[in-house]
Length: 505
Image (cartoon, helix red, strand yellow):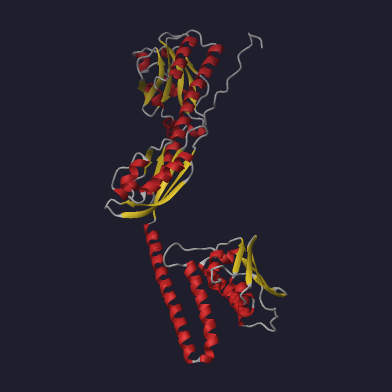
């Protein structure tokens, strides 16, 4: 480009017609909250350079508010504002190009203006409009002189004023965007805080050193005390029986950076204890920053009490069921003594009831923890068939499986029937006979193979009896499986499959 060519025109924004209404324009002016930018270094540098560029003693970045003209930055002027009605900059509203007044007393628009007739006795004025991104005229970058100018600004000076005005406008727009972003962040934080303060749980946060730096108001409402600054200072609020284990587990999870959860008793403001569930998760808010912890403490006291009441009721029910078994067995034996012809039926019924009683005691013992093992149930059922030295005659091998209270009864009926039948006609009816029961995992099912050895010669049943129908009903119905029996030369073989879902459901 030839150095003597004229400078290219700058892209000065055009004012929008919708902001010719003063109310709309003032709304935009207020959105800048520009008074906080008074004395801003960037704006100050702009006005100082503008004065040098135009070879005048004074320059300002002005903002036209409702009742005043505010000087955000000024050079060569003591005042920080003037009344709005005398401001030269009023005449720049709605225009994009510069307003230049070479001789103010000779211009009818300004001849009687107090700023011309009185101090500071303005004679020359040039104002480059400041137009916002949405097209509102908000003020000017202006220069003034106390002497009239015979010649107007040259192209270079005009171009320079336009560039400087755009720089001033970018500074204002940047600040407005930052204000809006901060306001949105504050609003989101306020909404989040209102939400956290409104939840029924105690909510808290802690830094990567384990210092608790926030608790919502729910803590004070529940405990009646100020929040503890560290985990160790939770001790007065946790039941003495719960604190050692809970604190040790928290330290372990905190050191490993792993999620923490625990149930413990928290002390209320009235001195009573409530069961709560404490949860905490480690979170990295931004990459490279240290971990922070966020957690909640939820009241589960009613649920805990309901579970305790349920367990108490279950124990009472188990005790009553056990008594019912004893009563029914006693009645059966009494009837058998009075009617010997019914003794075989009574004996079989008694054995079935005893097997069901053992199954019931296995899955719901009155004392101790409930067991849920298929092998454990089978061992309990086959215990009566042991040798005199307590060696099991039904040998269980292979995998184990979980069972529920619901599946224990059909399991007890099936394997009691197999064991009883074997004791009458099969391997368990002889001193040397024994049974192998192999359990294997078959994906969604459990497979069991019952194989008898050392019994009397096998004779295939001519028709299905009650026992077979009972096994069929229990396996295919309640246990969602299948069964097949084969009368091999060495003894009876029964293959069964049972759905895992039915065993644990």
